Length: 383
Image (tube, one colour):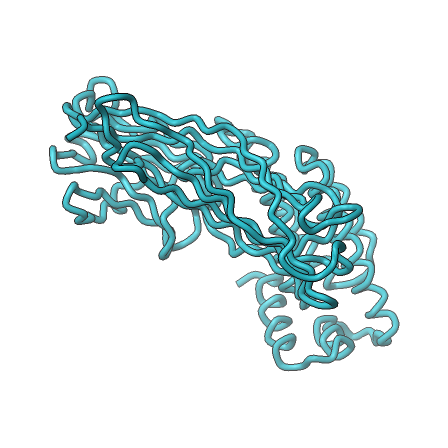
């Protein structure tokens, strides 16, 4: 174990045991030099301000994440404090991780990486500074799967590999299954090669995973969460694709007054379902923005709309991707638009959320714009 790892472990053990910020900081600063409570508090304030400023800038312009992260590193470097040095080391690692992704065959857009950086900074703030900020749990994300579906007939002459591009694939708990038409799943994780934290692949055919006519799809999971479905096309499979584009929804006010006088907690999700005798796909877009104190002003609702209608003589057999997406709860601490990249594998490519806006918020300016992914659909002849 290196010095920083050991230091961090001891520090966090102390953090859990003693609630006083002065005592926490005194334990973190294990040096022969005496630190006054006032000196420690000032250092913590500077660190907090530096991280908050970086998070705000990433919210406004996530494409400039490299510049913002480098500026944060420089700010932390001039704070004469052991905790600042410890956090600075983690921030540098985050920056290096992002640079490594764009140095390879880049399949995630720059906003996606910037938003990942923002969430990572909020986790550091929560871990080191005991912040109460709500931040999404770290998990892998898929930016692109190549090919988007696997035609078994083309293996191995035309298709001999399935590749996943994304982020944080080195987390423990990533598994890959082949799901058969009867719902049975076979674990094929042993064939999954993690080249880097942003790229994984499996070989298809005799030298890797040999598919049968019973195999229906690949399912990539992390712990108990499905990350991606990849349809296995058999000779008789007929595919179609829905392109829903973008959808704007303003949820109505359901509680309180017309202003968010405190930061609202925001949640959002999309659910797809097959309706009308297997001829249409419906999307239910839910959003809620609610104050957690004061008069509990709330905007909440569901927008239900049709995103696909089957051609005459055809029925929908199944939606051949994840049919839901749940955005983790977060606290909206600014009045601008927040961008959340969701990657491929599910119905949503990106959320653009205005939770806490200038002026009259609930039912007026609070809104979500969903940019959908292309939705693959397996078809069959109508009964």
